[in-house]
Figure 1 (spheres, rainbow, N blue to C red):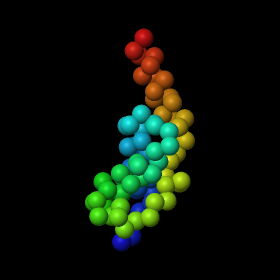
Figure 2: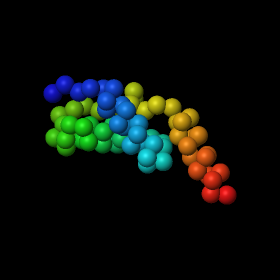
Figure 3: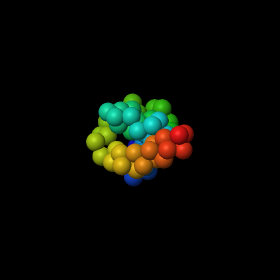
Length: 72
């Protein structure tokens, strides 16, 4: 099975952002993206190469800081 790394990376990034940008869970979101795109059988046959899946947290910090400001 051929995987589209850019598609997986984008899905993993959005999943990570929606979860509040937790630190150190990149493999979890990478595998979650693969399951969402290709189905649960794909994660069993795919090796985890998640180091490139996570973008910087700067965009999430902007999102979370704006949420904090609006609550005050």
